[in-house]
Image (cartoon, rainbow, N blue to C red):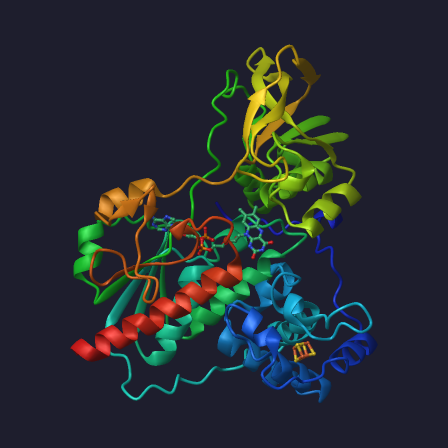
Amino acid sequence: MAIELNEDSRFQEVVPPLLPKEVMEEANRCYYCYDAPCIKACPTGINIPVFIRQIATGDLDSSARTILDANILGATCARICPTEALCEGGCVRKEDSRPVSIGRLQRVATDHAMTTSVPALPPLPVSVGGCGRVSIVGAGPAGLGAAAILCRMGYQVDIYEEKGEGGGLDTYGIVSYREPIPVSLWEVNLVKNMGAKFHFGVHVGHDLEWNALRSQSDAVIVAVGLGRVPRLGIPGEDFQGVWDALNLVEATKTQPLDTIILGDRVVVIGAGNTAVDAATCANRLGAKEVTILYRRGQAAMPAYEYEYVFAKQDGVNYRWWTVPVEILGHGHVEALRCMRTRVVEGEATGRQASLELIPNSEFIMPVDAVIRAIGQAKPKNFWEIIGAQTKNNRVVVDPETLETSIPGVYAIGDCLARPGEATVVGAVADGKQAAWAIHRQLVKVV
Ligand SMILES: Cc1cc2nc3c(=O)[nH]c(=O)nc-3n(C[C@H](O)[C@H](O)[C@H](O)COP(=O)(O)OP(=O)(O)OC[C@H]3O[C@@H](n4cnc5c(N)ncnc54)[C@H](O)[C@@H]3O)c2cc1C
Ligand code: SF4
């Protein structure tokens, strides 16, 4: 679907940029540590003290180049990285009880790059330049991260993407008030300008046969992400008014907002980051009462703490220890039949504890829309199509090279389905790792 850049104030970016005075104050808080722990805590290894010093000296061009050199999705990561768990979590500046605001400083430099000319990134200093053709399936963060490195080494890179635009979930799945679409499309353009050839609207396995792709490439990188939200498996799920959370977010980014009708009372099933995004979207679409239902307690909630706070600030209600057992209605959702749960074995604070339904705990919630936000399906079919070895529905890869059981075929990003590790920065880091592994492999065989 085409991208709809809507002007609605409710969908504009929530976090403001730092003011010029704040930028200098924040940059000058950095100690420019030797062997800086913040660099080690960044999966893409951005040289944080260097880019902060470049900001402090007013050299924003160089600062942006330092960031993009290590992470081509530096503008996205400046907005949506869980910085408190990564770079800012590693920052030693703790005296005044808060670390340096690395994410927001990173945004200063990358915003500058977006509004001025794109800082050219030099070819990578490799002793033997890349000469070969690498195909990438999927133009999300992982695919883009790999493409940027391969292009800078001299490889011919073709990216096949089933959607009409690149960026993956950054473009279609992350709510625009956390990351505006132009940020993601700007990053796609950076990779395009490096020489990568994008083939949009091509679903590999359907529009382009896997064997044809494989035979035309020296190496193939699979970066297909995860699938849609799985079904709940309860009666009434096909009624109108039942949504997949990712479809809802995508609709807010590709359709006029007044065509998305949810109603006044919305229930979101699941308590991860996707559930928060769906709930806050529902709120902005005009729902009067938005409730998140989760089968476990608050301590086991998978969403980041800042996401939870964001949802609470938006007025979202939470109902813990509750599951939906039936959607009631006549073709359209009218109510949700729920039951309460309790732990039968394990720690109530953990996500592994076995649960049971509490007898006679049923209750009915009148609702107008139900949004499923219980995770994303694994790309099992893709591994079957290409014949890669899997274990527990996860593709098996060499941890050093990310090569699958098929020689010359690599898998990166969310499609590796590593529990609890789905982040943009992690996907970009995988892309870099696979790109270097391919280079080592191809220069050996050329
Ligand atoms: C609602 C939501 C909120 C999130 N919030 C955050 C956040 O705040 N911070 C954070 O760091 N991460 C967040 N994430 C996670 C982050 O978006 C992912 O970790 C990241 O996008 C993974 O990148 P990827 O390239 O592996 O996959 P994707 O972004 O899913 O990209 C995969 C691409 O492959 C394409 N594709 C799939 N199959 C085929 C095929 N057969 N042929 C051609 N193309 C194909 C898809 O269309 C897609 O463009 C969020 C995720 C969701 C769902
Ligand atoms: S750890 Fe904190 S203070 Fe030290 S270089 Fe990194 S951002 Fe600056």
